[in-house]
Image (cartoon, rainbow, N blue to C red; front, side, top):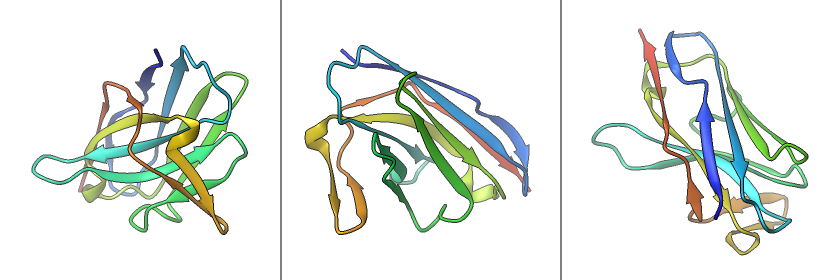
Length: 128
């Protein structure tokens, strides 16, 4: 079973930066994808970014241009560099793992479906 452990959350002022990291263990198949989703109190889950082992990426419109996802295939880690943070970015951020059957590339766009495994989450709070 895949296990995911996140780190890097915290409190930051608006306009600041944070870097989230996630380490995956127990990966049994190549061709997976990893990503991040977030959930704020009283709000629906938002899938914000994912990346496959080929480096194809997806970003939601709300974070595009501010967040950058990266993957280290050798270390089975995925990072999310978050810049120009806004109070509306405040949420619990979850690392996600997608099996090879749970993502696809359509044209030049990566699409990640519902995650197969997720981490425990890390809190990100952006103060105004």
